Image (cartoon, rainbow over the protein chains, first blue to last red):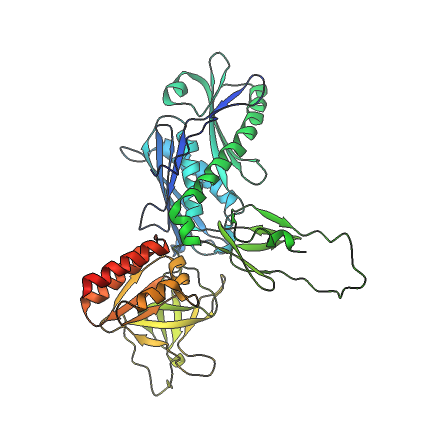
Length: 235
Length: 244
């Protein structure tokens, strides 16, 4: 991890509204670290770490060909063992988010493959996958209508909302939700929930999320021009 | 009208950024009416009366009204008129299939070589390298290559590649090499005499007097990608001192 890309935030705790405190763990990102894929990125949120690689637009199998847009395939590889049902559901969440933000119609009859390798899971894995995916797609230079970020939050047994929870906090929580938010309108692209919660809590979370999103997208975005090699290459 | 775009030239833009074109509030009665059209290059597209960015990179501008996003990419997407280095992968009837690193293979007719006729076929084998340009390149059709220009001359295109080395670099480096008055190219010229074929698809072919020199140039070009001008000149100087 390059030290410049790792953004040590001075304001990691941010007051959003009376009851809700939004705090994110320290996070960082590195782009084009792999030589073989067309785009790659690794994203770290606290101790959770995911590496992403993108291939494409490449040749597509006839059986998977779509005549008016590109076929997007997402593969999530767990740290140990083979992908199971949990990984399949994560794949689907990430794929739907990417499909919403990518302009797939600009590359018809081609395939895009996004591979997410989990390096370590310490909670908020899905949001880390989403963030890594976005950074890798950006690095591959694929046409996108907007960027996106993922935010996970947990509702603890006493009703407190924890953003970007660790694995221990996730285990103790009553409900767990992940949202993908786009950078242009800060609208929700995808949501995935687990556990029991009330409608009121969700609407409360949504406002918190919207406050959280610009904060996070701006930070990921700021990490990019700081990389010396990227700025050199572009100038 | 496009002053909003112009003042952001040179800045890093990201997908989702927008420019809106509102009609000017005051219309001068005396000044001649200029038609202001914006030509969108790669990374920009029109969406109603807005200009939307869909790639991340630096906004560039060319007088009078061309704007584009200069982005770093590794996968090539064909564009009409661009010259590329391709590898012949199959011969079928009167067309060759050529791999150029894109999403599908391009076709190259045997009649589109200089001096080729139905009787006099060009000598092209599977595995040969060709330097060709795109006659047809759009997202809905199979790309088509030709090895002649509009006047029927080869103009440097055709089969090449005996005794050289082919390697891949990023598309950004290729564009920098091909730019007029390229600083990398002028640095390289001072090193060894060499033959260099640069395809817009990120493939570079080098041939020099000895195998050693060819390898040095290939390694230098691959490492020049992530260097500043000073670092590069320093490295080139070091190589030059070591070589003699």
